Image (tube, rainbow, N blue to C red; front, side):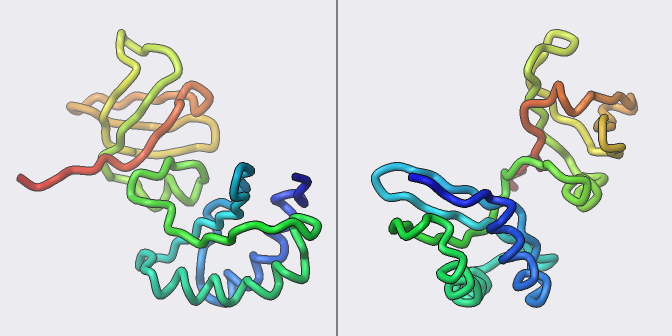
Length: 154
């Protein structure tokens, strides 16, 4: 199935998101038995089902006018990115400074491909962490995934 570029879809959705104080986190299109366009959103207060529903209704007609699939049927989903979503943008890193992170690396560093540490900074190229009083940095290109560590109270 042919689809329009994600950047073109984002151009249509961004003004609507801005007006509703919603952050467009990611837009993805999955082809398959039931093709689906999924729009991941976030707000400073988090995302609930009501927010997803309101945004879905707000973008439905503009997406129909854009016709991202050139007339082919698809399912539109609006969702929260979830608690374990990977940090990708500078805003993601800034928002989570001082928080505990799970870091998965492409190749071992000091014998480990999985680390947990506190996020201390981000400069667009490297991510800075602290663990047991020791600060270290990892080039973002060496990180497979960095996300907020989920800690369950016992």
